[in-house]
Length: 367
Length: 98
Image (cartoon, rainbow over all chains, first blue to last red; front, side, top):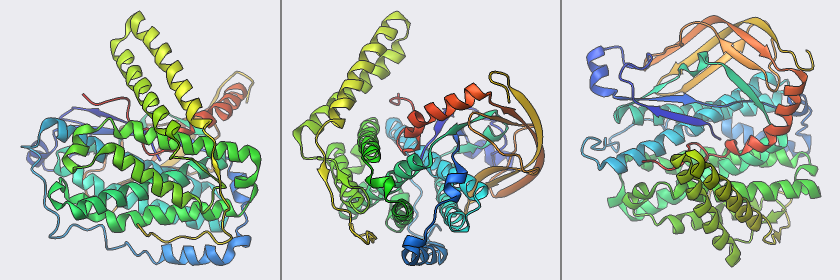
């Protein structure tokens, strides 16, 4: 899930500061304006979803989510040791804050989208599911927000009174994108957690200790979208939709790799080799997604990493061209865009592996 | 709704902003049952809704909904598909830090 975020420095930023003004000056030195996107979709189509073909699995899943196993998890305890933000290397601090803000924005946007679906829908099964998922996302956002407060970053929710345009997605695109987003989120969190378990000296922020149970929420949201897609086999089995799924796999996977490489200091401090990490996360996500997708990307094909690197270089060239501006920048953007398009097409055209989707594809977190 | 012309309407709404440890969320609900369609724009009037840490603020406000023209609605439907990558968690910020 996602949205844009803007970080700007404004000591008097609108009102999200603590009441006590002394405390306000002491703590909040920076304000992050959350600027999530607002989406709309074909709610009538979603109302027509009939979960009866998977009723038994559906009810079990809803019961598990309603029982709220993570209710007590997002509380600070004695394991929470506030990092020394003041003396942190400025580059690392910037990247760590960027990591937290992006996670917060992702959770927050998920919450907005799920709540909207809950509110606009008339299908009780679907509404109940989205209500439960919105609950989790808002809770995660609150927890990250608290971590940001400690770092002196205040979140500004003033976006509500700015004009907002609603973007439209077809329901199936929401399923593909959010399914992958939740599952890849699980794989990312658990991979970091397992790595830090073995390398406790690299624990640069206490929030990572909460990841093990936290990512179970992401995992179960992914399960929910997998079940939703099961209600209508066409969503995953028609040839057009297989091409769309392939597109989403390539896009989500490659964008993740590009983004991760933008935070070198953050990963270095965690003792994580970014290439290893990305490979690991994609392998896990790819394995999990066999529960519902009839195709699987061939990540071992040498063309995969080769073109991924080209895409990353094109993306870096694009950033540089944007910073340069002027005519040179404009030309640079065209050239970088063409290279990125070519690299993406090459990734897309790598032959995929067919996958037999199991009858009962339900999974439990096992990494 | 015209082919190119835009129409506006005013709707009462309830704004809820929670800025607590347990939940960070912000939602707008229209109280007259107004429905938002692709390409429509919503502007909630008044000062920014401010919730200090630990607060949940629920306020009634009015909002202006600018309805998209038919052409714009169609355009939003077509291009929305291309923007859906934003749903993926990683597309959050523009370019490298520094």
